[in-house]
Length: 388
Image (cartoon, rainbow, N blue to C red; front, side, top):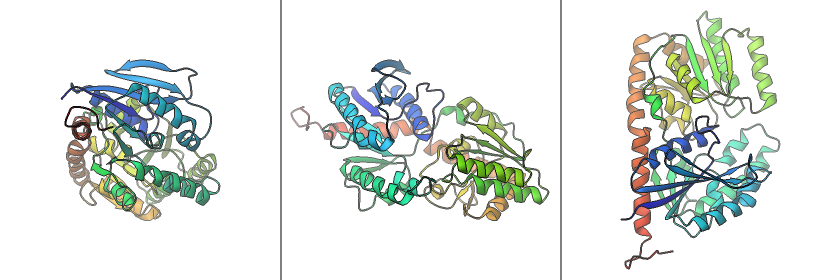
């Protein structure tokens, strides 16, 4: 079989060393791993709001095509100008297969090229807990658009059993189960653990439920426990950010809650090297990158008992699952891990073992490549032509 020409349509950062958000991080990790495979000619197609004319660059062996992104909401780009630009470019590029991620899956809807779509989140579900105005109405609009897009996809990559569950009765194509990849760097972090440090990497917003985590730390502090919560992530909802800051002042946690802001990969690695616990108590998630990275770094995870998170963390083995709306339960489990050195080490070992098998980029790239080959072969007619 000839070398496969693959186009990955996704959010891709201007600086691959500083991805913003989980989709960009996944894209960087997957592109790097796929580009290293000898039988793949890899192209990345992305919309960039910072440019006014198309650009092209080579990164890690992959060709990155940047197209100007028009002003407007993510929704308007997904169904309007963004969709037209992406579809027209992909038809000219003529790859053997298109692998779309996130809202780019909506942009390739109906494209007559073999395609597979990785769903990273359910925007209609996220919208309900996002703190925006008219969340129910916005959610219903997204639900109609998203479900229509999923039904159109001939192949879907599910990053979690939670995704597969949510697609039941909607998706008509073949579903492949493949986890998100993380960078190899997270498997090689030197341990400089500080036994009182809780690290969390997530935007400060209602969906990530930062306030409840702060309240849990307040409870631990009131018990006389030594604890430091280090929050990596920008404030994406200003009113909610103000509530979190007010809680820190009210509970007198100024020296116990450290706001790091948006940080790059190098700083995340440093934070993980020192953390004793990783905590994420979101209300809605599929497969958070922060949990994967913490597991690779041999860190126990305390996370929500809902959505995709229970499929990542084995309760009582690699961490604990908690009710995200119960600060007392969060505090109890975080305190249990902080206070038991042997439990912390054993959970860390189990976390790393799981991460090596499921999240290592070489393993994820190999599984993804197998899907590509099957799809390309499926599209070849007996006489050697394309099935169209």
